Length: 57
Image (cartoon, rainbow, N blue to C red; front, side, top):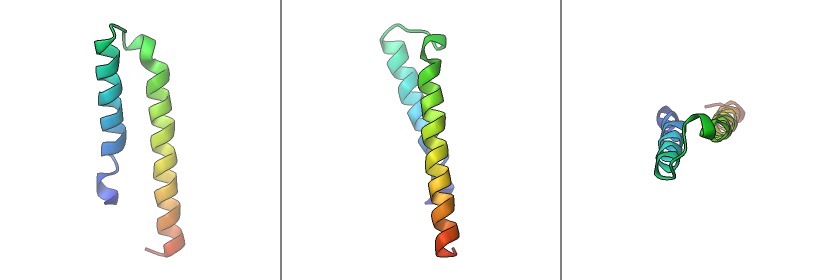
């Protein structure tokens, strides 16, 4: 499961990119959304790392 965690930010970014394209916005206008995706993905990675450390796995 953890080896596929890189897919979360990749899929979210692709969805966000498609949303921007469909609404006629540029990537530059959507940079804030990519920042939110990076923060969200980092929080998920920290959570899973903490859980693996706590459970001793």
